[in-house]
Amino acid sequence: MDPIAAKFLGAGLACLGMGLAAIGVGNIFGNFLSGALRNPSAADGQFARAFIGAALAEGLGIFALVVALVLLFVV
Amino acid sequence: MASGSVIDPIHQFQIQKIVDLGTPGGVQLAFTNSAAFMFGIVALVFFFLTFATRGRTLVPGRLQSMAELSYEFVASTVRSTAGNEGMKFFPLVFSLFIFVLVANIVGIIPYTFTVTSHLIVTAALALIVICTVIIYGFVRHGTHFLHLFVPSGVPAFLLPFMVVIEVISFLSRPISLSLRLFANMLAGHIALKVFAGFVVMMSAGGAVGILGATLPLAMVVALTALEVLVAVLQAYVFAVLTCIYLNDALHPGH
Image 1 (cartoon, rainbow over the protein chains, first blue to last red):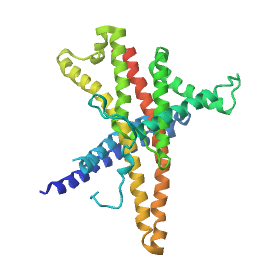
Image 2: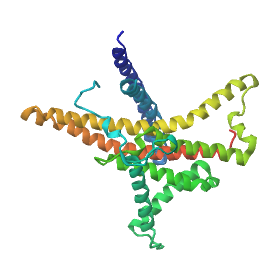
Image 3: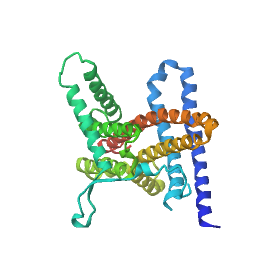
Image 4: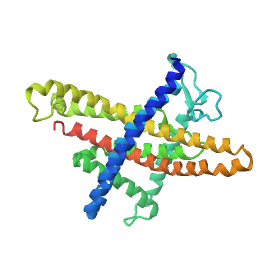
């Protein structure tokens, strides 16, 4: 296979990781919402923690994007 | 992105020399746009905080309130993650948080340079944190600091594997800390440039093109709003993770 074509294929595959990270982030906020609907008074105190968890999960998706960018621009 | 494409999202990250300082000792030294922006950020924060707390009134006005709120925000984060002992690290955490926050926000302004979108900058900040953790841990606790890697309540035959896993996860902390901030800034700005490029490309297509160009323009506006959120959130996550790692130095062992 042409290495340039393989580069672009690899970059496209790396973006699958971002879809999985999106599932993770949605998981966190979905759980937060279901908990908040059960106990609204405790929801505001934990909202910052939900954002921290979402940022950590989104970070892994961004790592996948970095792999794609490295494949496209560096290799 | 093939070379010769109209959209060039990489040019915004280029380091440009403003004052070339030659090559002392074989190292290429220059005052670059990155350094200029870093000086600008520090000057901005310094003058804001100095000017805001100049009055030192008991009941704060608006500006002093802003300074006090930022102090209290970071102080409460440090206290809740690292305890009252953690307040001795407050200057470090506050400096890191404010620097990363202002650097991220300044990068959203068009035609500015995003300091934190370079891995070397975020890696330097993350290494400051990790070296502080390691050095303070060893100075304060001696070899007891290594109990950090030995979780309690683990059966003896699993212990070697657990120690290896814990060491690897500890060593991955500076990598993930720096890479998270860098990649978020890089990805956000590249996405902004790509959609802005779409606006220009579409508006070259006559009247219909200009009408259609409002769609990527709306996307750029939405992305800018998202970028502001990501900028603040990533600065906060950087600060919180710093506090958590410092807590490991203060109270090692699970």
